[in-house]
Image (cartoon, rainbow, N blue to C red; front, side, top):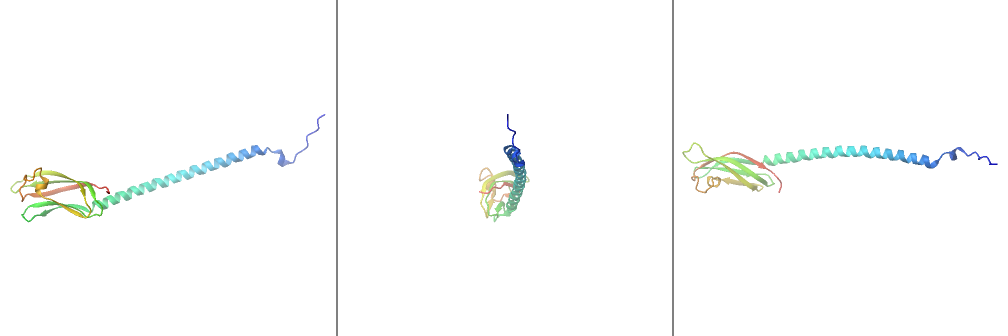
Length: 157
């Protein structure tokens, strides 16, 4: 005959390993959910910081571009030269100056496009008529240079 199994107290009736496993799964799921939520918000913060960084870089470029200017200036011999100035503290790279050089007595001049690789900080460059022509003697000394517009791509060196 088999002896009856003794009645165990209630705390020993439960399979502790099963309940410990279930508890571990629930805690891991909660940790995973928390990690997902925190990763989502960290990504949102990074995106906003990137947008702010792009806005700041654009504002810096516009600030520097506003310190680069071009104009025409009368020379001592009566001619006019183009002048390009960079008043910013950063060099400007790849500057294109488009204009027209007209010799005295002509109604239409010759268009030109000058590329300046680097315009140093706090500098001024004069573009006399013999510089914008393909040959030094293409224009007379009193030729007039009119700068139509200048465009630049600014990059910090």
